[in-house]
Image (tube, rainbow, N blue to C red; front, side):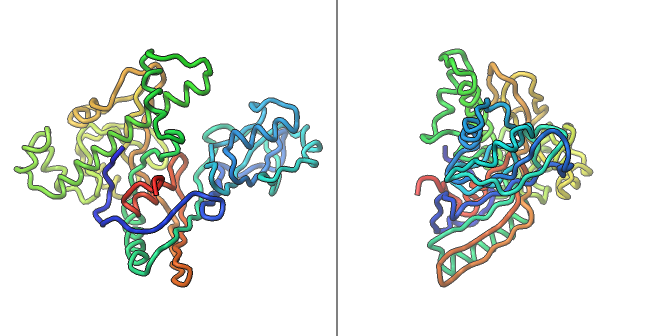
Length: 359
């Protein structure tokens, strides 16, 4: 899928490939573990394994089912990742003999509850870009300043769509009852890919609209966009690069309740201050939809899906961004923190302003 990018710079040349040396992620837990309780909490480092593969290896060693091991989120396979998992402390002694070439237990503690999906605050990343010349390094510095100031679009990364990038195609057929899949986990994964595809299409369209609003007058925009004159005038006045439209569904950031944007200046100020952010639709049942003029755009990316829908932040804010250029090695290293559910590869693509999984 070709997509719009949020920044106006030209494409930047560098080489990036996910590997344990050049892509490192560490999970930041949602809460501090108590140090006591019936659940053993392990801080685990893995490389070149997906989270389910890592869970499966530990479960097989212990002779238990995968579902007995709790985890907060899925981590990239082609990377060095550190995350927390939990299991009943009765397995602690048995784990003392556990050895695996791609898995290492770094630390352990205890907690009263099992770790469950979503029980993480954010992820801290280390990324190394290669074949970077001084001109590109200067451009990367400027892009990172812009991202640190304004944030970035929260696209689903290419990992969401499978090795061939087309999981959403079968997902659409499953969602519409045109195909069958006996494995419920695989079916859910494929349908989620279709929901993610629709979200990405919508977000790319909104970025395209942002670009048009920034480039043309209200009179010219009337011929380009199917939006009323007063709406276009409101969008032109907004300082944020993502232009809100009346009827957008907003959410308190980094978590909180949903509410509708109706054009209030107070809500624009809160958006600029990162107190709230705009959300996009994950099509499906029970999902809250945009209204008013925002619905005119969102409805083009809605679909009848036999699965629960939701809202997802469309705009997020990386924090603690650090960048370092190693001229001798022609490498650029960066560290940053992203909220849960956001993709580091999307940030890299925003810098490159091109796809990075096809180089």
